[in-house]
Image 1 (cartoon, rainbow, N blue to C red):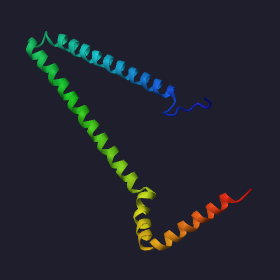
Image 2 (cartoon, rainbow, N blue to C red):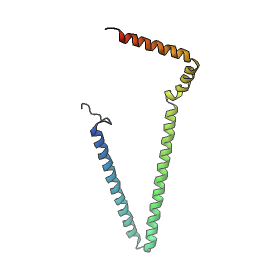
Image 3 (tube, one colour):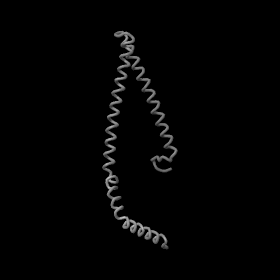
Image 4 (cartoon, rainbow, N blue to C red):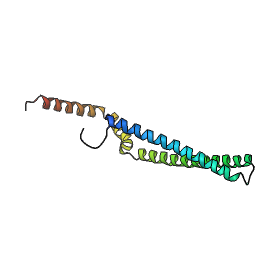
Length: 131
């Protein structure tokens, strides 16, 4: 296979996707372990100042607040992305022109049929010609 681009039918594409997924999975697991160890360290550092239940509650509450903040930020990003996608689709030439072209074709169906038949006849006659 020549060229440096991968197509979806190339077996290297599936291998690279699997490798990327494996790396993302391992990265997520290591990040989760890191968060757990940071929470444990914070808990142990709070024990001299709070009773163990209070320290656990403080760390758990902080984790929930952090998860809520990250979720809200992700939701805002997803909403902005959806708005941009809708704006892009609405500004697409095909989406803008399709109703007008289809309306014109519906009003002038005979003209479109005649043009299609003429084009088909031209290409059929051209292909039968001996070159």
